[in-house]
Length: 360
Image 1 (cartoon, one colour):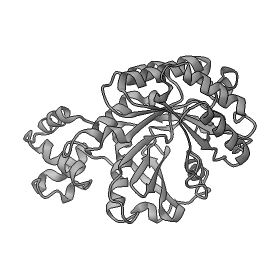
Image 2: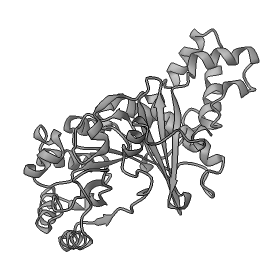
Image 3: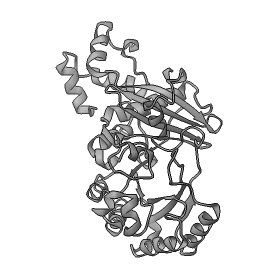
Image 4: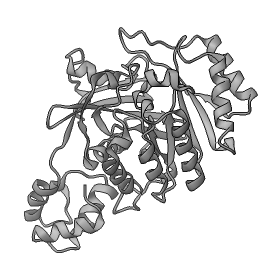
């Protein structure tokens, strides 16, 4: 949870020389070693003190599922208070992406989302967010996904609304991008922060002076439909939300991804593709937007389901005809409670038992 200066002050308060802060950081961030008892550059009598003070066991992995030939791995975590969160590793030929949770549950109340259906339990701390990355990197080093030994990309698209836990999320991003050995040394350009449209925080995000990416979960181009899909839209409508996204693009020079989950007979009509294109064109240089269409991964018993392939094709054709850059996201993990929040719900309800793989 501490930045570099705070770490130095903390070790001094514990009665240790200031230089020990750099050694501790190097072990944790640089060497990916989270066991202070094995830190041989610290005197043996110091290690227990450092462990007790700075490294409490915040979360335990309680269930692990894999899919896509081992290229997708989902972990359910249990916090000290019993709250369950998820993270997902997804390997591709040239990168490994980690989808991270920022909250236990979510308070945005989107009816098609498994996480939103469960409500908000609490925000995660910066340390709990970073632990998801630490363990993912450790597992990759141990050979979890052959050919990959480090997470290269982060997407804050797991459980929770990142902009509703702004301080902890930004603390985590700073630790991710701080050069080794004081941080993980990742490129900000490989980090994507998603939001359903908390406009004031989107405007604040643009002023952070960092080159990470923004993904706006839009899911509908008209207020009439989006009010029902994304309840916060009643406070910050489609136009205000797109204006904030356009502002982020102008200030940072980074293209914004427009996330659009395709839902059968709900938001997948061709005329909505035309309306979306019109609204993006109205923001000036629409090339700063990229539409990312997502086949909906339905939750059990839900009325929300994926669009027909024919409707997906027509939607894409209408966007591309208008000159809007568009892709259809590759679907991963359908056979392992793939939608965000599904594994957490299964663990809470006892439908998935703790796995032996999760303890590694």
